[in-house]
View: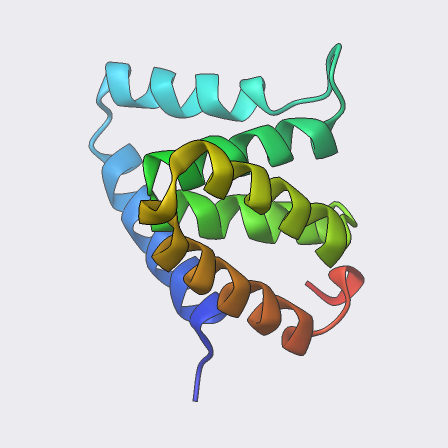
Amino acid sequence: MKNQVEEFNEYRQKMNEKILGDNNKVIKRIFNLDTNAYAPGALDVKTKELLGLVASAVLRCDDCIKYHLETSYKEGLSKEEVMEALSIATLVGGTIVIPHLRRAYEFWENLEEAGSPENS
C-alpha cells in the first residue's frame, strides 16, 4: 500500500506534466517563477522553505504544505525546526490552521517513516 507521500508525489507529477504539456505560456512562467524563487539567494533554501511552509499553512493550502514539508525534509531540516515554524504559522493564522497543522504533523511522520532524506 502506498503511503500519502508517494500518492501526493505521483499525483503532483502526473498533473504537472499534463498542465505543462498544454504549453500555456503564462502557466509555464508561473511555474518557472516559483522554482526560481526558492533557489539560493540572499536567503538560503532552508529559510525559504520555512517561509513557504508558514505562508502555505496560514493560507491553508494542504498541497503546498506537503510540498514544503517534503522539500524541508530533503534539505535536512529537523522536526523541531519545522514544528517551530508551524507554531508561528498557527499563531499568525489562528485556530483555523490547527486542522492543517494536524495533517502536516502526520505528513512529516510519513516522511520520517519513508527513510532518511538521502533515500528520497
